[in-house]
Image (cartoon, rainbow, N blue to C red; front, top):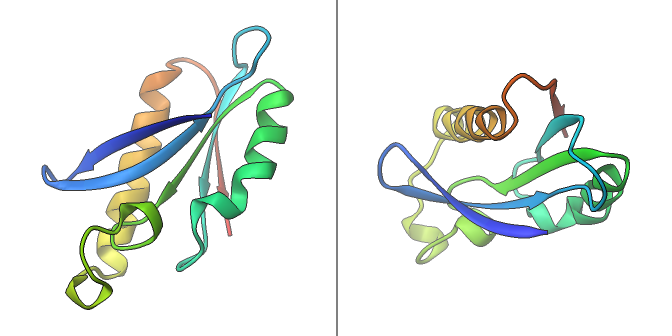
Length: 108
């Protein structure tokens, strides 16, 4: 598992975790869009299992949540539209990492 930071809207850092297959190239990419308020760590065992099956998996914490939280919760000014942009940015990031390969989206 590799930790990454993805900048969204030019100034908002999102914490990502990327799981890659240990043997051979990834045959597809999966983005796990977690439930609101559920940290990406919750999906870690499943993401690791998917990576063992030959998939590149990206999990993330939405802005203002989990590892993407900077400052206090009372300072968070995010809404559903912001979180939708977060998911779109992570999808684009995953697609760019494996161009030409299938991209699967998994939501909770």
